[in-house]
Every structure is written in C-alpha cells, then in structure tokens.
Amino acid sequence: MRTEYKPAIDALLACIAACDHCATACLQEEEVKKMARCIHLDLDCADYCRLSASFLSKGSEHARLVLRQCIEICEACAIECERHAHDHCQACAAACRHCIEVCQELIPKTDPVDEIMAAVHTPHLS
Image (cartoon, rainbow, N blue to C red):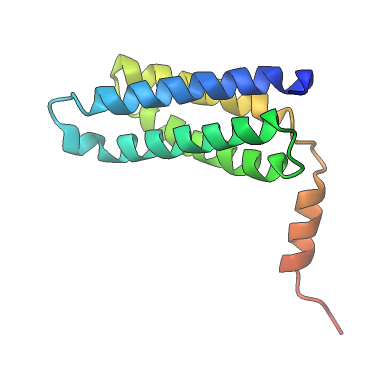
C-alpha cells in the first residue's frame, strides 16, 4: 500500500463501518419503510467504499475513476442520512462527509479523466 493513500483508506474503512452500522440500525427503527432509501444508500456507499479501498490498496491505475463515483455515492448517502435525526444516521453522514473530503484530495483539480470525458461527449466539428 502506498503511504499517501493511508488517510483515504482509513476514511473509507470508517465510512464502511458507519454505513453498515447505520443500515443495520435503520432496520431496527419502528417505521423501517421510511428508512428504505437510507438503507439502500448505506449499502451502496459501503460497497463502493470497499471497492475504492481495494483499488487504492493495490495501487490501481483506475483508482481515480472508482473514487469519483464513490464520492458521488457518499454525497448522496450523507444527504439522505442528514435528513434523519437518529444518532446512527448523523454519525454515518459525518463519516461520509469526512470520506468525501479525504478522497477528493486524491483527485487533482485538473483531472485527465475530465479531459477525456469532455472529448468523448463533445461533438466534433468537421
């Protein structure tokens, strides 16, 4: 593992734990149906964090691609969890926000992926 990835991997692992706990705790709430979106996002977020931690751990050249999607899912999870007053939801939202912050540091402001995606989606003039 590259040492510069350790803070991100630690944040990803903490987010996994918070999301797994939140999903399990949401299932114990009285009005569990109202927590369905939260549970789904918790599970998606934890899965993407696991994938991202794996890509970083092995130094994959595609880690940035996975991290970008992970950040997007963490954001959605944080927003949903912030809607609920439960302690487990608030803790999950905080873990997601921290994960976003740390992982964004690994993606340069001028990311070659942005340039590639812009070229793919920009109509070429003849």
